Image 1 (cartoon, one colour):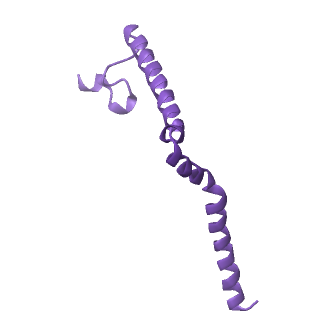
Image 2 (image 1 turned 45 degrees about the horizontal axis):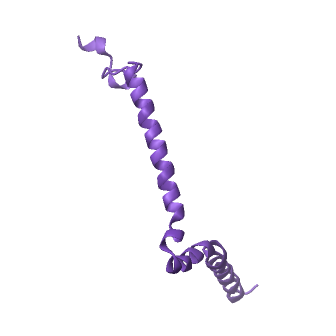
Image 3 (image 1 turned 180 degrees about the vertical axis):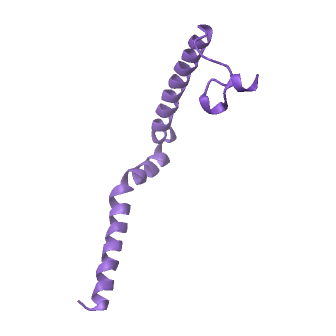
Length: 91
């Protein structure tokens, strides 16, 4: 195989990757871009779903933290982790 043929083959591989990316992988984003011109709410429904899930998860997390805080189940000393030092050493 000549050097020019190798260059053509490599160029074809990279052009193939670019074409696949643009025509197949980015097709859903092109559809969203076209949908946004018709309806902003429809194009952003996935974002609203993610925000609702985040709000529910954050609320659940805060309620769990409050529950453990009310039961005093957490060690709040500054040396609760071994890497922070031993409290006995400094007294």
